[in-house]
Amino acid sequence: MLAQRGDYIYLRSEQGPALRASVLQPFHASAPQHPLELIPPPLPESLSPGDRVELVGSPLVVSPFLQMSWSAFHRLSSGELPPPINTGDRNPAALACDHLTLKGSVLWHNPATAPGTMDQLALDSGGSIVHAEILRAAGGGASTSDPIDYFYPGDLVEATGVLFPAETGSPLTLMVHSRQDLRRLAAAVALRRLSPTAWRWITGLGSGLTAALAGAWWLQRQVRQRTKALAMSNATLREEVSVREKAEADLARALAQERDLSELKNRFVSMVSHEFRTPLGITMSAVELLQHYEDRLPPQEKAQLFEDIHSATKNMAGLMEEVLLLGRVDAGKLGFKPTPLDLEAFGNKLTDEALSATNRRCSITWMAENDLSGAHADESLLRYIFTNLLGNGVKYSPAGAAVYFRARREGSMAVFSVQDSGIGIPEEDLPLLFEAFHRASNVDTIPGTGLGLVISKRCVELHRGSIQVNSKTGEGTTFTVRIPAWD
Image 1 (cartoon, rainbow, N blue to C red):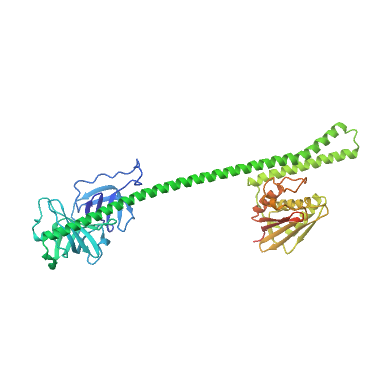
Image 2 (tube, one colour):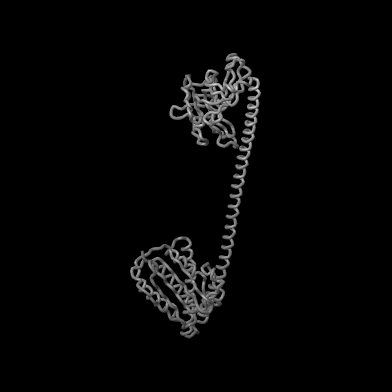
């Protein structure tokens, strides 16, 4: 150990350079002490410079010199101060916290006037201002009238002691243990013409200036502490505002989702009441006729009633299948399983199936515009996508109109298009086209659930592809689907 000053211990470590150590502080300067905080034992009263000590703690990298905070302190043995380091021409600030010898020119000297007090001496050493404090033993030391007891400005002196690091706005401080550690190397002869009384008056002014500087440093320190506390309060307020804004955003999203769910429910109820009511009415009417008049009805009329029941039941089954399929897609239960697929043969087959399913109400033309061999895709997903798009093309086109189904390869992408010449989609309905249970405002009495395009889009997304629509009211609609089908 080199010295003890206030709450700090200065020591030269056996594992490295000199450092300053202090009691381990609580986690935060403005927070109450944690009940589990480690409280170091008190320092031994007999602790003296030169003692060997052991500290257990944490290094702090908060300033130019090395520091640590200890949580455990032990005095190992007594001893002598280690030999001082000779600063030579080096800046003393680079050796802060260590035991050293420096040379400097006296700026002013304020000698002690009573035993047990401090001599105060200001030196210019290596371009740094060093404030030396010389402890005088009680009842001992030289007389204040001894010429060597006073140092004049300009005197070259050599001082040995422990150098304390400078705080912001304050000079370095050298603690000199005894007057024997301070000696004059050369005198400033020209300045001896002033009497010691005059120099004491001048150095008194220097001491006053030092006191003023110390007061300014203390005020600056108070301002820094208050500024730090204010910054912490502002940070806390900003965090609270951020939490509140996040909560408000979450609430807004929840309300928006609630509105969307309410709208979705209304659309579903409207679809069910409209699309299920008609086939149910047809079925119930046909069943009642058969139940009451079966024996009176001609075979041809009975066959027509059975056909009506079958058609209505088939329509309701299709509606329920679409609702269940949408639920599977939203629940992530509809997988994507690509396999090698002959796209040209697939297009021909799907075209024939669509013609049969629509009773050839419109012509459907399939065209492969270039080589489509070697593709990989999920056939079941593609079948649903284009069965729905081709069915819509026929359903919303006048009888006898033409529907075109095309495919081409663009690099690794397969590009499909389904073009019709039907009623088209109003511009205001395009942004909502792929929302569940939404139907365009111009469909009139054409049946539909508003689910086909939603499911088609989800199937395209499972392929990591995209779907686009280009439509003009009264002129027709073209859907373009792009999916990666080649490596």
